[in-house]
Length: 504
Image (cartoon, rainbow, N blue to C red; front, side):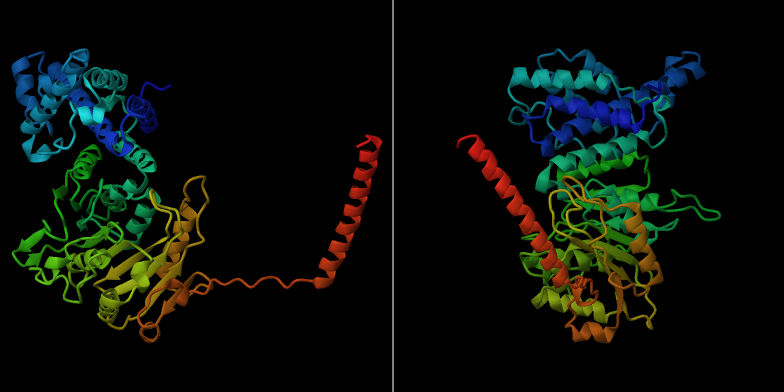
């Protein structure tokens, strides 16, 4: 093996470390312990390498080294260092020592890490078992991570640790069942969304239900530098209500070295954190999300009096918050230029009552640009097919059509999950960019056509994928049946002869 660690090496080593928890702790929970430890190990190894470099530069002058280290992105005091905890791995209170180290690390890096580790308790009897078994698990965890060298000079590339973190989140999502949707969007779908919204340098990108941040990062990675700009010229914004998932997102941004990211914790629908005033939402160039499907009890009781007037088109039903997220996203996009892409269950396309009225209003305001149906079983935790709605607040007034794409048959079947391959994405993007009709794949619907269908966006109403069955040659079928019957008679006669010879 090369002396440099690749993302795959790190992934395999950390995944093996998960054996410490498997069978004893729910995967949806033990991911927090493992990923937090990976983050701590990385910060510690970076600090060790930087300390060695500065010591060499200043001839071993500890005072000068200490002063220089204060200018590093993260401060890692001795008692917070992974190696210090590893040396204490046999201590009876090792769980408590890890908690203390994380608390201290937060205090030393308040602007970046405040409350990030508040949802993970390494001394929890409920999660990790009684003292002896808890200590054994944590000792094994520290020993497993001690085998991984995460110093930047020992990694195969700048993105190695960030990619490994992403791969691990995906692995955990595959094990987490229905809970997976709370924190992860499959990479292929994220890349498709990123390509649809076409991010450019200098843009602001927002996800109101950002989960672990994977979708935001994919969109930022799709930014291609233009003359006089750099690819990392952007700013990411995200809000997440689940504390553990919010922490994953914060760490994800740091490990991907995304310095220009602001991630807030809180309920977006009840209390949006990104505002420009008491009654005004902050506006973004691009808004993307994979919000929770048909969220119950999303805050309808307060929606009528929403200070930001997000629900002027109508208040979504109490038991389905899909359109609450959609309208929040549309209202958060820059007027005249903003673009929105949101992943939704198919019910959003055709359900009536309040949702039907909101859908009609969005269409009549000429905001809806495309409806893209994807294959079933692409997401972790649910086998249902989903759709991507693309809204464009910069559509020319003369462009009033809506493009429908039926990509439900574009996938590679997998053992547990279907896959959206690059060729499938390329076909979707080609149809979207050219905005054209393709038999049994895409259709450009006029405003009149949409109205005639009652503003129902169910894709089969617009894209006919019916395949005629081949005509049956009855004479040939009858001839084949006759041949089979004759062969069957021969087999029966031979079986009868053998039975008689055996005296049965």
